[in-house]
Length: 413
Ligand code: ADP
Picture 1 (cartoon, protein in one colour):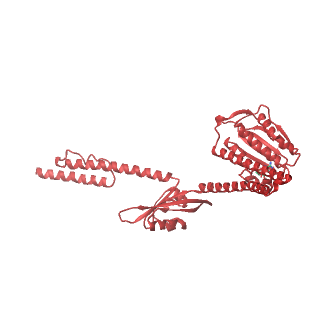
Picture 2 (cartoon, helix red, strand yellow; picture 1 turned 135 degrees about the vertical axis):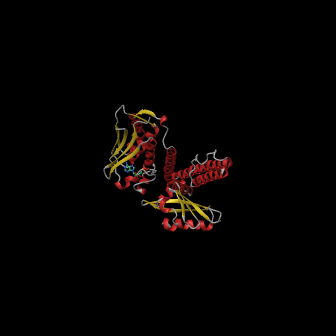
Picture 3 (cartoon, helix red, strand yellow; picture 1 turned 90 degrees about the horizontal axis):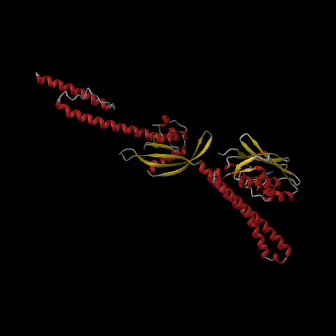
């Protein structure tokens, strides 16, 4: 009778334990105190203890895995690079949001679909297929179009072991390198422009020296002519190299250290610019007029501001008819100090204005090079404005004249 009771009670506990194990099997790791009540039957206590131990271990492993999965998801979705994982059957198993953007898809739509269905990008499809076939690291450059803009993307892929079957998928990383490519193009263009600009004076100097050596030095008039030509072109080389160096210096510092700025009267700077440019202006019968409130101050790198104004005034002299007037004006407007240089010279057609501050941009290559300029003057002005947190602007009417302005922020600190 007692034995019977005991067996029945054991059965009840075992049945409860089975349902507890089923609960854990479904991923519910909450402790079940009813099930693990220890005073039911001493013979079952070791089993209950072992079960409790297993529940705790499983619970903590599950918790850690969930946490790691969330970390991995956050990492993938915050990556700038697109990441796509495909299995050996060319089906997408993972795709982060950057990759979905490149492919104009949503993660939901892509998962489980084949690359032919999902990609709509023949180049990427071919690339992934080749990687799956070769089973080795590969790299290529692809062009993507997003919102009507072209992006150059570096795609690199690694084989991916997914199970023990020996079949391998692949993980592809897409890295947008459009900006790097553009910079590379600009650098190439700059080097080619510099070489071209240097070649012109060097060819002339070389030609003159050869002519002198061939006997022209014996005739004093010829000798003088060729020496003057050499002097002119050496001067040009000197100016060009000086401009390239100052541009490189300005570009190497995105913003000059504001703590090195001095506060000075703009009127003082106008006076020194007038002095520097006086001879050149006089030689062409051009007048310089200065208008500046006597107490108007600017906090800036004085030498750089002076250099920018000299560049603008020299241009105004070069591109004005003789006997013109050039006005330098300083005003304070809202949060800006505006320094302007106004001429009544040849002016610039509006189609050139958006590119006028680019390095080596000239309205008329042949004519403007003859004027002795380097094609870098306005690029230097732009950079001087930028390192102060300011910007340049220009208004111009062909045949009437131009006004170049330097806009400087009034407060730095
Ligand atoms: P450059 O050394 O050739 O003068 P800049 O960078 O200073 O080079 O100027 C670029 C081009 O802008 C010049 O070649 C010229 O065509 C045009 N330009 C600059 N300033 C003036 C101006 N005040 N009037 C008319 N054209 C100008």
